[in-house]
Image (cartoon, rainbow, N blue to C red; front, side):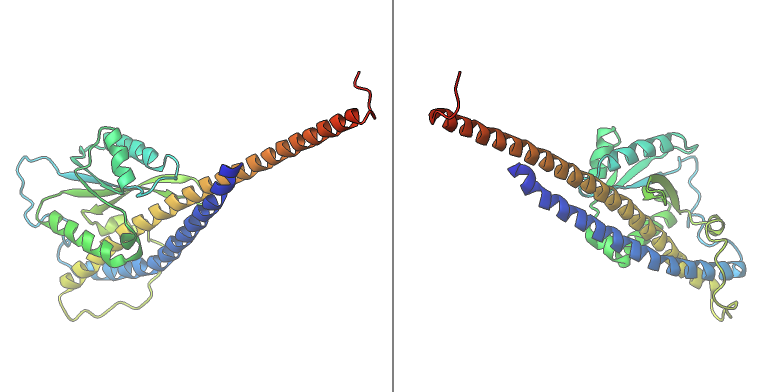
Length: 287
C-alpha cells in the first residue's frame, strides 16, 4: 500500500508531462502545416520556369556499377515507458526494407531506445544520434541536419534517404509511415497537397528561378523532416500518456482493493478483541 501510494503521484506527473509534450508537438505541427503549404506553392509556381529538374540527381551522377547507397532513418524515442513503441517500429521497418526492390545499404537511428531496438534485431545502426528536446523544439536544428544530408546526396555519398516512423491516426492507433526525403521530386508532393489552394497570384520572377527553387526546396525538405519528428513525438507521447493513464487507473483499483481488505481485517480484529473482552468479563460463555 505504501509503495503504491508513493508511486501514484509519479504516474500522475508522467501523465501530465506526456500530455503537455503531446499538445506542444500538436501545436507546432499545425503551425508547420501552413509553412509547408506556402513552400509547396512557391515550388509549384517556379518549377515550370526551370529548364530541367532541380537537383533530383547527383551533382556527379556517374557511379558506374556501384550499388545504390540507400539509407533508412528510423525515428524512435530517447526514453522508455511507452510500451513496445521502438520494438514495433523496428520490426515493421525490417519488413519494409525486405520488401524494397533496391536493398537498403545503411540504417540510421534517432533516439537511444531506437538504436537499442535495432541492435537487438541484429541491425546495428551505421549512424545514430540522441533525440533531444532541441531537435523537437527548434526547426533550425532540423534544417541544419537536412542541409548536411542534401550535401551528401549532391556529392553522391548517398542515393536515397527514407524516414521511417510511426504517427498517430485519428482513431488513436499508430500507423507505420515511410517518407522519402531524397531524392526530392515535386510530383510526389502533388498527391498530398493537391487540394491546397493558391494564396497569391503567379509571381513575377526577376532573378534566377533555379536559385529560388533550390533555396525553397531545402526548406521544404527540412520541414518534411521536422513534420516527421513532430508526428513521431505525438505518437510517442500519446502512447506514454495512455500507458500512464492505465497504470494510474490500475493503481487506484489496487489501492481501493487493499483499503477494502484492510478495513475488513481491521473489523475482524476489533470483533475478535471485543469477543475476548466479553468472555473475560463472563458476559459470553466460551463453550
